[in-house]
Image (cartoon, rainbow, N blue to C red; front, side):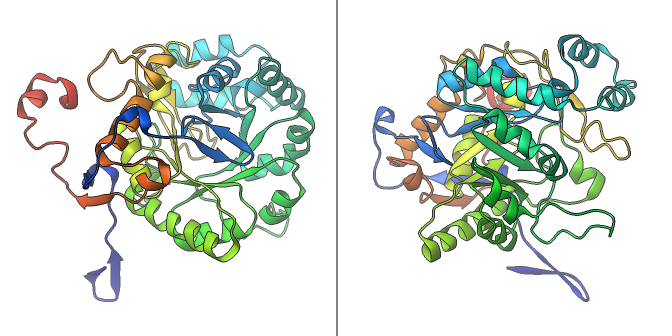
Length: 387
């Protein structure tokens, strides 16, 4: 539905995750019967949750541990891990500096050149410990390091930017990455993103994406929406991109998963994304709170160290428990940030959804008061949903 902004300009109404609620149907089931398996590329996982390719979230150890627990972690190949042989002192500096010095320090530290030999080393370290080596680059980085990634034996390659499209215009001196040719030439599945519209999703699917990342600017540490004014709230973005996935499947018989990326904090957020049509989710700040996370209780966005226009900040998230507690429990907190898998299975049971596909079909209501209705005491006392 279009809304008249003023003469000559109409706008589309879009909804965020906080504005919707999931409506129970005629059936319920025991949460133990809820099947959460999904497939990305040629890899099947028990848990449809991916840890974001952010330096405060995923390092080699986190990638391996997430693999062991049935999930997936993506390593940023243009971050600290591939610029420094020993990233620990660098991470110490990032997490100890004051907020006024933070941006300039990040610009300094990320000016260190990326070393191809470290890309190969990090991938091999993950593989040698039995982990799934999922890695991420910007389109420019993918063009430069794609062969290194393939040679090192990575399992999945995420090509990510704030916005990715197949119709990128560049100066005459710059040859843009041909996404379709890149997907064809890589010996491993290539995940493309980010996008928020039906049309761009369809184009990326036709280019050969093994999965699509959906979300522009909702991340906890991202400031792109404030800096650029760009983005679409996640509920609407996921629904539109999932529609493109379904139409592409009907046309080709090739089912490509859609991954909701950014702005998800609680188990309820994850459940609502899947109900809007996502097959899985990518999250950052919830995993940055793990005791094992490299960020030491801090979290920062991928565009934070930009030398010309930083579009991210560093936020203090604290350490609230182990990665296992956050992902599969048992929960030590009452606010939905622990036991994310348990929350998903319980929600699926409450809604009568036996698997992810059925969860995508549950009824959704527009409910802007969902998170505030009746929560006066929690809000006043900063407990549970009022934190």
